[in-house]
Length: 66
Image (cartoon, rainbow, N blue to C red; front, side, top):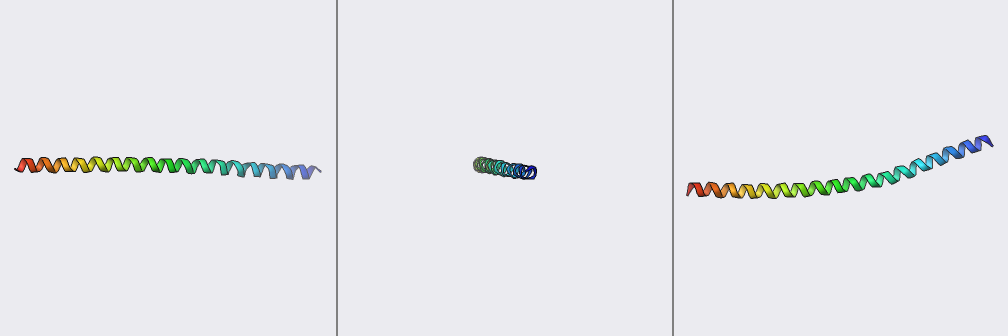
């Protein structure tokens, strides 16, 4: 009887561990997706900024030459 209770406790603990692992894994995946989306937004913003800066620099250089 004592061995059955110990085995049931071990199985229950393992099941709880798997449950919490799976639950946290989904949260981690969602957080990584949010982080990737934010990084993509920042990348787009930086790219737009540098394109605009490049156009302004080229325009200023053309105005200085003309």
